[in-house]
Image 1 (cartoon, rainbow over the protein chains, first blue to last red):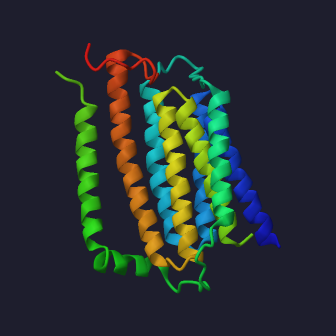
Image 2 (image 1 turned 120 degrees about the vertical axis):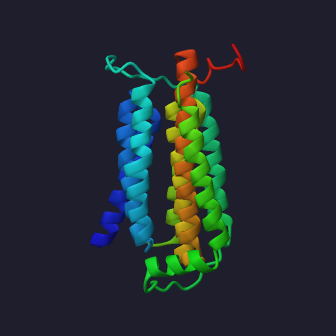
Length: 163
Length: 101
């Protein structure tokens, strides 16, 4: 009962702040709303027994990507202008298109016979993820590290001012 | 509450909101926020199928790779946006049309 209430509270929090992210007129408010969305997602991951992923979500998204986005806002606007506003265009048409896509998605979700297996709580997630990364998914893991290296070097090179 | 469809619907709504942000916002950083929402929706789907669809821990690993990709994407995208700002003094994606000046 109390778990149900907590679940729906988190769902409403997540979707409500996601709505703020895409609708608020002030860019910095959008960034702060994104913080709540990401925390809500981490909580939903806990409901899905993905405790390690919830931690990773908080560390990387909230601690990394969100800070990066706020840096981006600060660097691309004059700090002195308090009202960093941004407008949306063609909300009507965009909303209609998105509602259509959402409708199609909803019909698809309801009508697809999803393969559902009896679920058992995993004994240990982090240890299993580590083992799988080093055994079955070693190649994607190494490629991901290469991707990160390339992305970091590329970003550093791109954002450097030319002498 | 604890069913696959609930999570799929939450992810679908989140995806739609992110898409709405991407197609209506004209500020580059705001478009990036919409993309983050879309990636999070994909992650939620992966984890929902990991629990209910028998994907198990493999679903977690896919979600982990999505997060890694999102981090790389955010870093590069922001570097590009800052470069655009230095060149055009604006990050309105509609105003950035010329390939060279």
